[in-house]
Image (cartoon, rainbow, N blue to C red; front, side, top):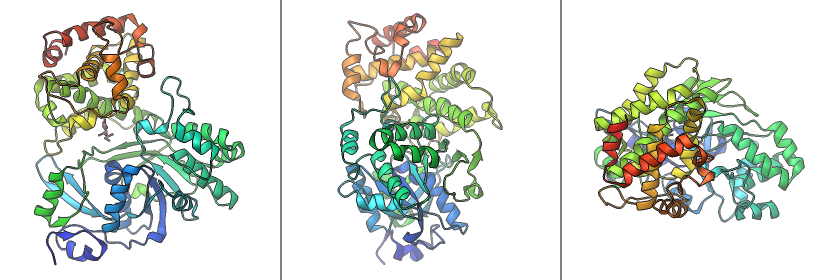
Length: 492
Ligand code: CS2
């Protein structure tokens, strides 16, 4: 046999001699969960939980769906590999434990022909449609929170319901078919980092459906459940060296493995339209109200990431662990979590917040994970209004501390303006709003508040005197001679 061993169904037995492989039947006819947005996070999280469940004898399986041209790459790789992939868990002591995951049994693209995707979602076996479409994928207007009907793809789907493009068009086409065939509705399960992610999915889908087909909207409102959930596992971008390590050290040829940390958590509301797999058997927590867990995770972990990411980018650190290895950054992030986030979180049943924060910092410090600052800073315009800016508003309302978060906003302005770190090295900026952010930020020398006057991102912050005074002060420090680290030292 050729070495390293090519990952596919036929080679599973050979691979099984040195790496854990699925112990179950991978029959594609049994896919009962259809997942839209098969990125690294889906593969380290929901697909992994389902893999554990299948190893335990349950039959539930996943069919992945790609609605963007960019998904074709994974589609093609999966075709070669029978939808198998390696999940490489990276431990803080340097150990890597890879495992072959087989819970995804099919993958369909919806870009050129929507029919296979609609029929998969409308199939009698489908019980759940799950989503990881990113914070930016929900198609709402950030200023008003309302559905964005101006999106040309949405306009197209409203005129041509049988030719869907976005997740909303596909969901409506499939749900309509189910209703017409008297099949039960599926559950729509959002796995994105948004507070009340299920409520958000429901609000957006109903807004769309009410315009496209009001009768269908009524049926969706009555029949479809949208559980809220808190999802967690740090999943860095796969690098060419991960592929090489898998081949050299573990004898597996996989064109797109996934790497992640050992930690994993999923807290979900137990509201399902059409049954669900017994995920509690593999550690998923089912609760009546996920709100406090979501808020805790988004405001501490995701915001903590953004704080380290933006300040680290300016200083020139490449990874999150490099940031927290620096005691100035470590002190700063703990102070941010303690002084600015903890006061706006209520009590959370069963959680010791001190322990949670300490474990978070240990996770950030995992030296083996090398989560890039550029991944964390990517799409900051979609992330910060969810992760960080609400904390500033809430602290302003209660007279709480705001300076540590405010420096991050000033750093984001500098980052968007200069697009370089403070030693002049260019930064890789990936953001759908990159151009707009740059245009606003570069006005700063003429109008200090230009960046935060973008109301769709910052709400009314530019009108709050306490905030603007602190912000101007931070900007002055960053734009003059003091390096970001010096400012962090001064204020934490
Ligand atoms: C990160 C998240 O993208 C980000 O900014 O904070 O991807 C984070 O790693 C995950 O939500 C962890 O569960």
